[in-house]
Length: 71
Image (tube, rainbow, N blue to C red):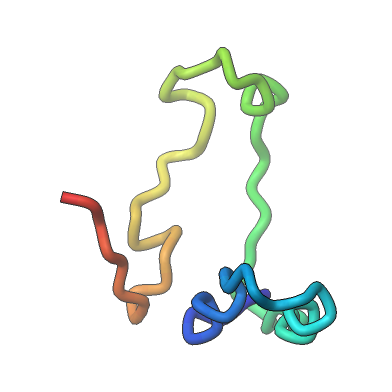
């Protein structure tokens, strides 16, 4: 998993694959979770609200992470 403070490095097009791969680390316990979803979720033509559980943004994003949203 790439930590937020490493995103700029991860996205730097001047780096070679070895340098970028060195940023990868195993994810810490408790960061990821599994939730059952239907196979329709894999179809880009499907856009109904019942495809994913009722997640809130706070549940999907680390509350200490600051997101820059386009205006």
